[in-house]
Image (cartoon, rainbow, N blue to C red):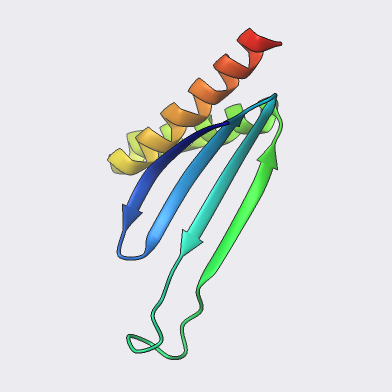
Length: 90
């Protein structure tokens, strides 16, 4: 399974896992107790079908046009690549 960490900084990460016909988008946030004892850390993954992955990628690309966020463009690019590679193997 391919893994790409597309955004990382200040304890926040967005990862795309792809392979074996699956696409997983995972979001993580790590907060150290000494920094903020009331803040929550979390890790959540979503299994996306090809249509959902393309919709997320499309929405991220649209957001980039509006706010020029480079990180969003990279996430969208990796989601599109995962869908294309998944279709090529099918």
